[in-house]
Image (cartoon, rainbow, N blue to C red):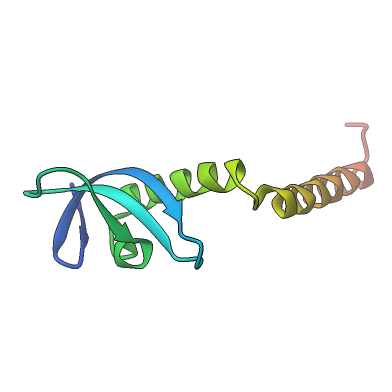
Length: 94
């Protein structure tokens, strides 16, 4: 159950990083390749869902550790207050 990326079997996703130019890379373990390699995240878009979930999780962790979380936090707080206000519109009695 490995995911394929450009004919390569991706066994595991180890890390995510973004270069200064905005390009995003993941460190992956490939079937038949000694040691992990860095691959452009675009090349991983054909991987199976389990691999892509790992990519997404690592990307979210990376984003939350870096500068991006400022704008995301603002968006999140807006979304949260929206959902709270819609809940208030529902009658509280059962």
